Length: 517
Image (cartoon, rainbow, N blue to C red):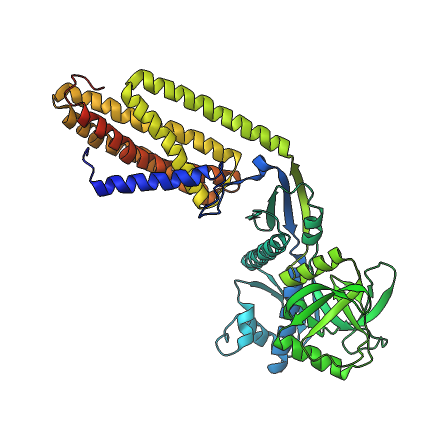
């Protein structure tokens, strides 16, 4: 155990130097640094804003039921089944069938023919529950169906929120799911989240619909307000195009009219739809609608077949930039509300860092003094290993660009205690071996070997707990588990490679001494 090959010694030295270099890069700016990663400070240390968003899934449920209702009507028409009085009430699809078709309707909804008709796949019992009283039927989403719907909308919303936040240039945002319908957004270093709140509060559901003067429009009409909150217009419910067909959107200055506009580019399908609609309706007004409000309603002067267009609406450059950002990131699946908001000032973060550093210094100093008093030269070796262990830990966190939080500092402090504990176990075991073995090299070797099982068991069980905390916990708990887990790995490395190497050098050089420890 006390023997080290030259290759092993070289590897230990290289790992120690590289990770120490990375660790110091957080304090010293190197001109030739080959790695730009740094440890980022979390919200509790750096200050910033905290937002908790809640998704309103009711519109998604209503839309899902409406889609199923349309599919159900198509299916009954194909099967020549007589049904009437279709309606959606209290999140249920209600309809009445002819008495002679009750068995056929039950057979359809119970999936007995699901393999031969594609529509049946949409009515699987794990998504819908079915009730009927003679020829009166009701369909509603099952509990599992609602869970699937909520999970899908939450995943989609998290991705879109991340796109929107990233495009604002916010440094190291933390975006996490909370429960079934909530999203946590942490924005370190951002004192005023007004713009972010504005962006996240908009669904960004973009549609293009024709202004209609005919109230008897075959698709139906609706009255919508303009974005200025004053004017209104009647538009057809027929959606010519929606935001799903947008590839890109950018703010731009229209020098001819001296105004800021948003130019957009459509995908191939969208370009065909837009070209066909504008070709057939030259002279009509096309309303550009965002979240139920008309941004603008320009007249179509000529067919737009190039797959690109522009949106005007008395924008400032900032509002045009934000609109382009919303369109690029895509529409949220459902509206979101900010239900909790907090701001952490940088002074509070500085106080937390100061308190954490004081705790670390005090604890570290007491440990150092105790080890020197108890184990003399080997206490110095243990203390050097302890310092090196901190450099290794910070170096690994730097390598992966980790975010350090106040619980993370607690994890580092706990690592100091665990590292010392391992050395104490080894040194006490060596003392026991020296009582029974005259050859001190063999005694030291036996001490490291026989204490290894206890040390590995203690650290592995703690590592398992850290892994569980990482996967089951969230936010600050994860920060603690990361530093604790990495600290366990660096502790084992420093104890069984660095401390053992230094101990072996000292023991071999002073093997003639009567008492080494």
